Length: 313
Image 1 (spheres, helix red, strand yellow):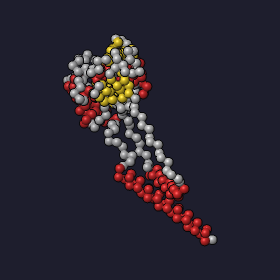
Image 2: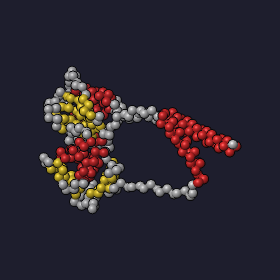
Image 3: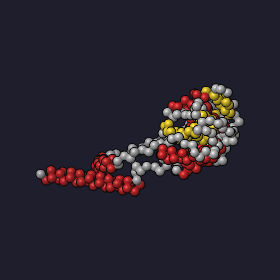
Image 4: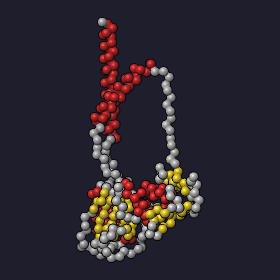
């Protein structure tokens, strides 16, 4: 009888220890949530409303600069989560577009990188355009100084890597269950620790260095979106790296424009209404120090990366 009583006391003691450990871990989790704010939305995510206001402001100032202060500005159209359009009834001063658009985005706290395309209303063809990255590091803006014919135009803005806000998930049930499970694991480990022999050394995690794609005297770090030419390194955008990878994987081969659009954009479900010319121009500038590599345009067909000397196997 005394033996059974001792066993019961030991069981109660272990159960009480589980509850104490679980409660302690739950309290730590609650304090963690309280002070760091798990699940709070990021302040860097743009909203369609902010983009709408910024584009309408841009259209207003461009029309006023063109001497039009009475025409109605059509509603901003959102083609997908990344792409927005606003229509102009007549041409405007393209040279003023980069400054006015960037000032409008800054005013409404829209900070994501973006690409700009000016399209013909009737045919939907690309007329003029540039990238947000052309505004940085003193890069020249493509197509500046070129005149626009009289007619209807569409201003299209496509954001890079834009992600809509993720709904908040209740964290308290997860913390409660997690604290209980961790408490059980701690008690179980303490109970069996005396029966475990020598600790088994853990195998170190295997670290894989990302493979480099070499072409000519240049190399592309696909994982880190970095182009290396000799001792110089250039950080690329996701789409620039994807386009460069496609060209480098097909050296001295002609890639049709439609094929490039399909492999670089359409397979991600993004509607593209602009040309690859802006991206090709950007890559050409970056590859200028490598005299063994040249991106040539094949008139009416597409592009070809000419590689005179390749270090790829």
